Length: 96
Image (tube, rainbow, N blue to C red; front, side, top):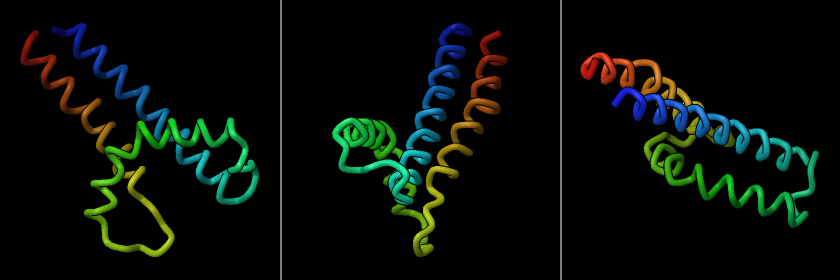
């Protein structure tokens, strides 16, 4: 069971990197640093959105309208870190 919890923790860490990559790519596209119409950039953007949007959309729906600022990735990252540092170790203590 401990190995499974370690694997889940590793997957959460990987997902945090995907969230950060999506945020950075959205900034680069918004500021015109990279061309959003490039097929390679567009496919990477669609892939990152397909992975992150199922968890970011409900957070955005619960958040009040803050204009052009989207803090839903920050909330999702905080939730991932909470699960990784509080929930998983306590489950591991229960099974150890």
